[in-house]
Length: 361
Image (cartoon, rainbow, N blue to C red; front, side, top):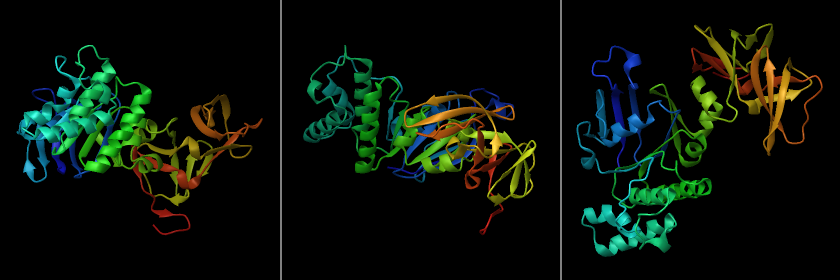
């Protein structure tokens, strides 16, 4: 396994980029720790696959360096990087059996036959294909072929990293959950560095120790699922993580309060002056619907099983709140925000409070 370092890395698909807008990946410095399980999360087109292909050696960056440990591999071929990569759509050898597909990377490296048989058996059990090891891959379903592709990517124990590019796209929902669980078990057992690209926040949050969120060609936050939920570093993270995403409102700060139009909201902390567009963000989970607080207009209530989502309007802007099961919406609905759960943003980036109310900075 290896620590993966990206130093001053940027990439443009244009031969002569003129400015930042011409770069698919904006300049970044980033470290993936040895043995970490990471998810690379973002909307389609944000640069996730480009970044993964640079790490794997399929794309050479326009600028910057890629290091595996202390070794500069920027110009090294994929075969020299000792990685395994699993792509979005299955890549299997149709004329080979399932067994031979899984064994191929090990035979290619001259591994002992007994070890190959044992390892193939372990992986086949993990992906639920023990009973069809002797079947040819031709004619298998797309999700079965993707399981073979996953298994072949994980069969080697000596790789520097395993890279997954949206590998569960063609897998049925029940099998997705099983495979994510098995991937986590594999990581705990063997400690490979794993980077898992997805646009699905559920996949990212259930697989990874750390989630790397990308937006418009740059990494906007790396953190645990809890950190992404509680303290989004960028308004995009607040919007993208959570269902529904974070409520955002333009505001003017006055020390310990945020002024929203003609009303004020306590922040639970003291903030210094801000420049540019200032907003406050509050998760729907921390919005209380009652008969007291800020007046809202309820548009509809959606029952999603464990709770209900109140879709409302506040000062002409949409507002979402989570209503616990059993609670009802009052005839004159009003909302309040938990002060300690409000985040403040200047030009989309989170700013830390100067001092917590009643506590030290």
